[in-house]
Every structure is written in structure tokens, then in C-alpha cells.
Image (cartoon, rainbow, N blue to C red; front, top):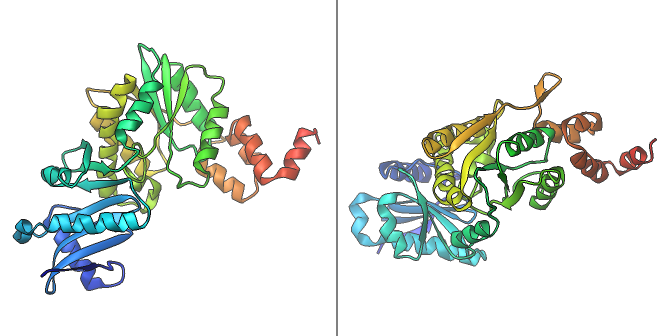
Length: 342
């Protein structure tokens, strides 16, 4: 009987080496962004493995010599049981397209696939419900565009991107990242975007849920400089393909707008991936970044200024709606003085 047990890839070098070797022999890139990993052993030989990261099942591999042993099912059942124990009832799966049938039989539904990756899910609320939500928000338009942003927080650079795009389309769908992995909460970021774009009647603000630039579709986005470029590129291609094939058609989106990216290598990889994936299907328009005093405006600069209590710099970088919120939240005495004219 083969033994299933947890693998501590960060603690035991020999176990990590066996895990990496099995993944590489299965055509998978070892990705250490995992919370929990299990393996099945034939005596001391690792013959199957799988991992979870938050609500994602990933890096599932079975030694080719043991493909007839139904080990894949055993690995996935162990991982889904772990997720259920943690109260997670909606989860995603990254796997290779060639094993789609096996995972479909285990109750997973396909969302999208690329040449290298199959992206599936199980549980609810699911992707079909998200598409239904988008469909209810669709507006009549001969030319619809889209922007996806984190806005951590909403800056004058973000506002410039939105105003520029909104002037070129009938309807602009502005997706604000739902993933709560930023300095500002999802609710705060959404509120600041809504307040900052209220003067633009053709802008429709929408959530991304788990289906755009999320921990599920593009976890490397949140790692920035720590992300491996090869892994980031695979994830970016998946995210861009999902947008092109499943999301854009629902809202009749023809153009995706992005800001020029001189600061973040991972975001630039994403822009490059969109350009490649969208070719011949969607237009990708890159808007030059807005600058001030010789530097581009970025949310990173705003967060740095906040840590330094530098509200003079913040005032230059963000629209009045964001400034009022930040001043009131982080420097209430200063804000009261400014409101009274002191």
C-alpha cells in the first residue's frame, strides 16, 4: 500500500529535491508559493504530489510509471479534504490540459485553458454566476473599453488613465480588484475609485471577484519583485486569455486600456502577455504614465509618503477625493485645520 503524507518542502532539502524532480519530469515548473503539500510514496520514492495555496489546488503530478494506479484521485481528494477542513468550499485548480477528463470526473468545471495550463473550479459562487452579474451591468455601446486596476490607493495617475480611456469609448468598464491583499482594503479601494470617477457618466465600476488579476488567476501580481518571471508569464497569459475569451465577449469589450509600466517588472510582463494574447481579437492601448516633478505618479509613492507623514507630497499625487479620505483617516487634526482654513 502506498503511503500518503505531508511534504515539508521548506524544511527538508531532500524532500524538496524529490518534489522538484517529480514536477519537472511532469512538465511543471516548481513554484514554492504553496501553503500545504502532500505526496504519495512507494517506500522511499515520491510517486505523486499536489499542493494548495489559499483556495487553489496546484502542482498535481504523478510519476509516469504509476499512472494506472489512480493516484491523482487520491491526491486531489486529500487536498480537497484539507480545504473543506479549513472551511473553504469554493476552490480552483491549475493543471495540464491533457488531464482535463480526470478532473472533470472529480467534479471540477473548466473555466479557461491555455497551451500550458487548464484552469478549473469547484463549488460556488462560481464563474457562471460572475458572468451573469457582468451581463446585468452591460450598457448599450458601439465601442466599449475596459480597465482593470488595484488602486492602492486611487491616484491622479489612475484618474488620468480612466479619463483618457473614457474619452475614447462609449462605455468604460472599470474593474477594481476584489482580492483583499493590499495595504488598502477592497472596500476602501472601491470607495475611492467610485468617489474619484463620479464625474464620468460613462464609467461602470465592477468587481473582479476571483477571475481577474486575483490570487487564483495571477498570484504573482501580488508578489511583484519576488515573483519568478517564468511563473508570472504563465499566470499572466492565463489571466489575459480568460479576459479575452470569457469576460470581454459578455460586455462586448473591444479595447483594454493599461498604463505604461516603467516601475514593476511583473506588471510589464502582464502588459506584454496581454499584447500577445489579444493580438487580432482585442485592442490593447498603453497610456503613458502621468508624471509630476520628473517622476511618474504611483500608488507606491503615495504609500511611502503616508509612512513618512508627508501630506504635502500626497496632495500632489492624489485627486481631492482621495486626499480628503487619507487626511481624515491618517491625520485627523491636520485635516480639521485645513477644513477650517487654518
